[in-house]
Length: 146
Image (cartoon, rainbow, N blue to C red; front, side, top):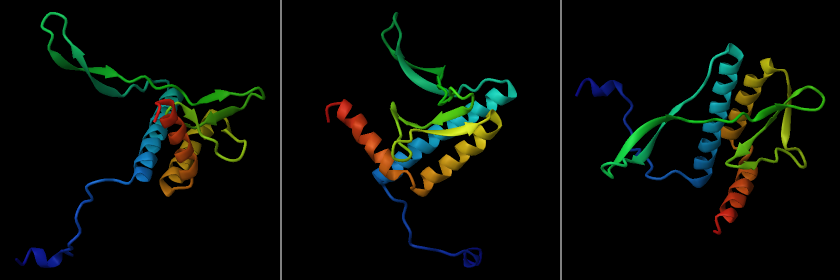
């Protein structure tokens, strides 16, 4: 028991379920991380294609197997009419309205893209965009008839 005396013991238990707000934050934070990796890869001249598993039915046996495929990620940034780089944030297929009537962030150059994405990710994890995420999630849910 002498080895445990140096540790701070607690009665905390792992929660069995995460709140819907935290799940949405984590989902958007993961997508922002993917965009950061895509931007870094584009700046260094490489490709970023994370892998995912899909279930596929074999034609000859009819058995389901897991196949690893590259996940396609679309860029959230584009060049605007004024020649500057602009970043729009998406939750699923819906654009997030970052402020009243503002749907995108003017980044300027590709060099500023990754720090801007990191700033957005920290804002999402801090809960600053919860109302916008909630609105986008509700619009997505309405599209499914629920």
